[in-house]
Structure formats: structure tokens, C-alpha cells
Length: 588
Image (cartoon, rainbow, N blue to C red):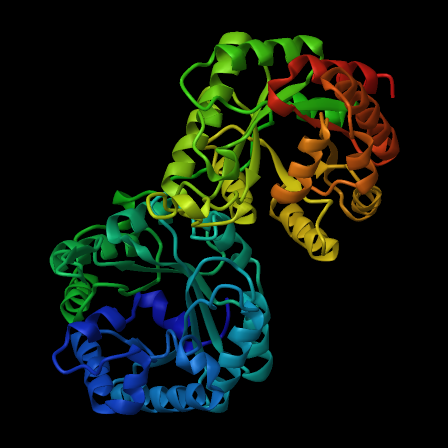
């Protein structure tokens, strides 16, 4: 434990923070339009009154009105951001003067795509310049940049107090797909962090349940839930959790071990007043709410493909397009024939090029359950939000499908965008972390997790950096785009040197010159050498297939020293052609 006065204070009871700034401010008459933080410059007396309302209600810590001072206009204008921070600190200090309330520098999450460490340390430096010694990094979706910032604060200000709060849904996952239990555990071992916990997204009841599943605390615990869940009336968002009920749940969080409590979205001074009242006269004791222990040790992945790779065996995966209609017979016949020919798994695309086809996960379940065929369904981020994705992963786990290819997904074709909307709530990296978190929490069986690697990318440096990031997010293997050029083969050599995950080299049996030209001109991620295109000129179907077998064999032998297996795409459902290629490459 540290030596900050807050450590002594919480020995005699929880430290009570204030409640919401943004949602409460917007409910007040005459609050200026625009970004809430700008009110520090435009209407400082209103910000002062807001702080005082919470302090009068019983809070003993207030957050500066700076949650999003590093986004919007202020992000582009450092002078304006500095002015907001200076004004916000001064207003909060005036409000707290005489009541002994702590003033915390409030820093919200970095904008998407920004360097989180750079954003947070820049904010921290400006607060430090104002003499602030208490910091709250809140509503965080990940640990990116937090440890660097906390250490910067402690190095610059002796005796500073740093609190970190993550925002998770009722299932315990942040919007970046990470397990809040794992994030809290990471902060628990950071020597520069004094308190760690939860805020936002969840109502008080669900936050109490999340607290019960966190690791045994090594640092002070925090809980700042929303006032229930929002609903929209006439285009405006409202929260209507009863303040007394809310307070009962927050005090239950305190009994659960939270030594710092407060409110987030939808809370008002009345919510804080009721919490303060019950903290003085609690109706529920710690014995009534025992912590539920939860072992975080993940299980063992049952994927047969993964087991073969780990045993040093080369695998062959074959992609078979899902049907366009409900007629499943040809697909099943093809999958059975490919499996009999020696395919270790059938991979199934998820609505390729943004066109609707039969669901890849349902097909994978059918192959596994009814025919004992190992399947690897693709799962895109294009068509599902996090709820739908989790539901699908739970179903796959129940059905014994242990492989997933996580891809961001092709965009919806322009012609369909008037009626078909993409989701893209996350990308393949975030999806990988999400899948890993579900397995760590024992909600699903562990998956053999794969991703795509575009060895035909014009900027392969950037593609390789993304792949390394995917590895850090938990990818076990990469299935590459087809090798139809020497440049693609050289890129596989480089990937072999720089990546630690398994590499499955892509092969595509081009069947005609028309097919080659289409791939070269119309399909993103595929590049075909001019020599290959010319080689098909004038060939009939039989000669074209013979050439496809030879070229695939040549590509397989070229990349064999650098890959752990081959990934063959089936053109036009030509299963017999792929079976010939499999027979040839098994001799390598």
C-alpha cells in the first residue's frame, strides 16, 4: 500500500466520488451547447455549481470536467486543451475548498487510432503543471498507454495517487474485446497504480456481479456504475434508475470490497446523496456478499488441426464456398469427398465479398456433428456486433467446433449499401482478444484461432506489422492469400522469418485465362504473374486443369520450407481438381 492520505481514509469507510458530469450537465437548463468540457471556459459558474451539488450531496472526491478534453476541437488545438484543463482544475478546487474533497484530474479514453500513451501523458503533463496530485484514468477499454502514464505521473509528482477504471459490459468484456478481469489483474501488479476498478456501461447490479469475479485485490478497488441502462425518448437519452435502489447496489459493491465508489452516466446529486446516506448506515454487511472465486486457467484446445501442427505434421486445409441457397447437398458431397481425399479441415467463407450465403458457422456445426468432419468457419466483423459474435462463439463451442478464422471482412458491395448495412464494431485483432477472453473465463472451449495474411499486399511491411499485432492478440496461425507470383513466395519467406505463429500457405488452382484475368483484376488480395496468365491462353478445360495441378504443385514446393501446411481454395466447386492437387502435394 502507498502513503497517500486516501489509504488512511478508506480504512474507516469508502471514499465517495461524485456522479456523472456529461449526462447531468446536459439535463440542466441553460447549459451551453457543444462539448461539455468547453463549459469550463464558457460557463465556469455552471461547472462550479455542478461540482458543489455533488459535494453538498456527500461526495468527498470530484473529477475535473475534462473527460474528453483531448478529443473534438481540443484535440486539434493544444492551446485550447491547455486552457480547458487550467480552468477545470481551478473550478474544481474552488468547489472543493473548505470541504476537504479531493480533486482528481479526469482523463477519458484516447480517440480510436491515436497513440494512447502519447495522449494520456500529454494530458497528465498539463495537469501536473497545474499542481494536481490525484489522477483518474476512466472508462478505459484496454491497458494501452496506462502503465506508461502512471509511471510518468509518479516520477514527476512524489506521493501522487493514480486510479484506473475500466468500462466493461455485464459479461465482463470491454469494447476492445478484452476481459476486464485480466485488465484489472494487470493493473494490480503495476507499481505505479494505486486503485483499479470499474465504471460506466453497467448498472450497479451487474457491476456488483463483475466485482465478485475479479481477482483477489492487491490494490484499492473502485466501482462507479451507471444509473441503470439508457433509453431514448424524442431523440434524447435518459437514465431512470431509482436513486434509493441504485444506492443499495452501490453500497453492496462497497461490501463486495470496493473502497472507492461513485457514479457514472445517468447519476445525479440525488443518487450520490442516497449512497452517502447508506454508507453512513449500511443495510448490508460484507458477510452477506461473499466473493465468488473463479479460476482463470484456460482449458486445452481440442482442435485436431492444432494438435497435428504442434506435433510437427504438415496440414492441408481446403476452402469450400457455402451455398447461395438452401440446397446443401452439393456442399456436403464436396466436403465429404475432400475429407476422404485427405483434407485435415474444410474451411468455410463467411459471406465472401459481402454477398449473403449460407451461414459458415451453421455449416461447420453440421459437418462436425453429422459427418465428423473437422471444419474451420470464417467469422467476419462486418455483419455482427459483439453480442451476436459472442452468441455464435458459444454455439460453436457447444457443437464441438474448435477452429475459427477471424477476419475483418470484405465491405458490402456498393450496389447493396442502400439496403445492407455493415457493422464493423471491431476488427480481427479485437475479435481475437475477445475469443481468447471468453476461453480464459471458461465461457467457451479454447479455439484454434487463425487469421489471414495477404502475401500479395503492395505494402507488405504494413501487412507484416499488422500480423505481428495479431500474434500479440492471440492468433495461432495465418492462412495466406494464394501464391501466384514470385513476390508472394518471397513474402512468405519473410513472414516465416519474422512471425512465430504457424503459416499455412495459400494455393489457388487457376483453371483458365479468363479465370486468371478475373482474379488479377477483380479480386482484392490476389496477384497473378503475367507469365501465369499467358500460360493458359488457348487451353481447354482439361488442359487448364492439368496446368492448374502443375502450377499449384510448383508453388507448394517453392514455399514448402517456409510453411506448416497448405490452404487450397476450391474454384467453381471443382472438388476432383482439388483432390488431384492434394494427392500431388502430399508427396512433398
